[in-house]
Length: 419
Ligand code: NIG
Ligand code: FE
Image (cartoon, rainbow, N blue to C red):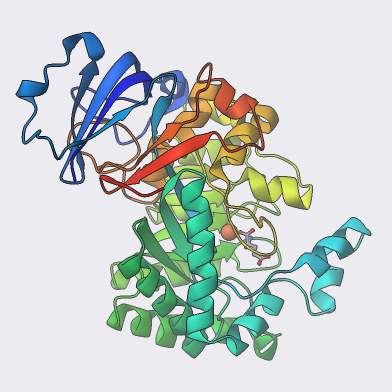
């Protein structure tokens, strides 16, 4: 199907000429737009775009009476959000822990009552692949309707070889059937299972000697992740796991510095991680390590908000010249939402990002954080046509301003009208 969008009030995040893989520092406030525009989508990709006054339909390749024309008067068109960090495959929900938290229980106390990551692991063990698939599929449908066009999904609620493989197979099936662009990440090192309490090194050995080779043998993961933080995995253990993953071509994307200055950021940079994520505890040393690296610092404000934690020093990071991405961290324990529009608002409100910076961080920069910025994250000729048409809105700034409501009217994925 070919689609011609006309009378677009504003075409947002366009790139003409040489495209960027991400924007950093001052450039994060560059957001290129085109007023009163048209956009032509052909065979799944962005074919061309321009100003309405220059639209000459006869020059468009393969345009015919079968081309769908959409009048987007009063509406804006954005590239779809790229959600570069989620744990969308899980069983059920954990609102009991949420109430416990409201009543003042700490994370440790909740874990002692059988809550936390291990709670989800127990439930995942009991759930069938089919049930996990169906639950995840519903979540994917929901995030599509809210503007997401690409998503990274992690394992990490298995914590045994068998259950990690089960999770990754569910992700593979989602990849095969969903219109979303999906990347999968192996996160065997999400928590230490109870059976290995006091024998953490042995669990790390299991990850290295058994899980990684089996994940690689079935080609189930694009990336490898470790929760490198206080009380979870040490930088040394993280190094061992990342090195083992690299042998099988798995690039790192790690959880780091959420609970402390854990050394996770430095380890991630050292091993050429695609991204280091969370980053509430980012100081001068961490910023120095990230500057000039190819690792995308990725913020997960949904988790900081939901858990009532401190917020990453994002203003300082950008002002130091760093790029930043934002993602939802959609998971049952610390961020049970995949609403990237809300993440956009949180970026502006809690991190003091300008709307332009926040939009860059959930499109181009988060596309980079999941290794797809060559094909997604901006409106550029040749990129995949994953985009959304807004409801009538007055300005770009209205997107983060109007927090909590769905500003999206129609979604186009792979050049097809999806919803
Ligand atoms: O990214 N920080 C580690 N893992 C998840 C939380 C997972 C859970 O509580 O189930 C996160 O926030
Ligand atoms: Fe996470």
